[in-house]
Length: 215
Image (cartoon, rainbow, N blue to C red; front, side):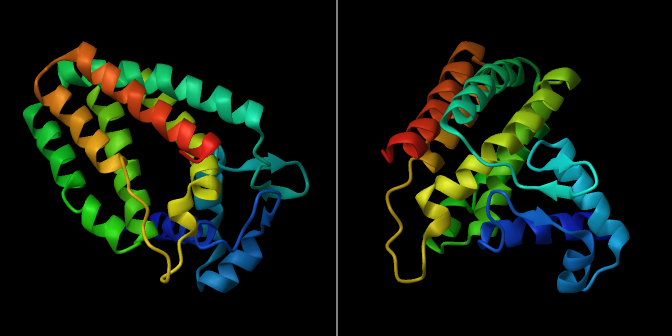
């Protein structure tokens, strides 16, 4: 793992752990000191989060976590449905057997890690699965679009999904995500683009409704 990737994962962990809230600025010097890292990998990791849409940049002030709004959340998740729905359909047509096997390996520990409340690893699995499907579409433009919108949607998931606010004393509520992920993968494995797209649309819609209505 490169220093940049390590900084990236540590910053995401701080966000997941609640050290930063919407509106907070992420200062390079402060992060470098708290992470015990030099400023270069921290700066690159922050720039990467800006490119991915998770952070916003304000001239002369730095990078900050944008304030989520209901209007923006709906636009983000609708756009994600368009991009990732098509990515899933294309993956069903073009993914290699090796790519499908890799996606299956990504999902293997998901239910166990959910039960263990391992927020970091669950977030990494979700990222690897969705971006893995985007990559398996074999369309570089759709992959880049999916990547940007995925991270923007995570602003809402990290701050409003009840799972990321559990304490060790809370029961883990029933999770639909593992079943939905497996259904998407199975449709891709069956080489059924229509079903893969439908399963992806259903999954993202359910995620949005859960955040919006607490379903």
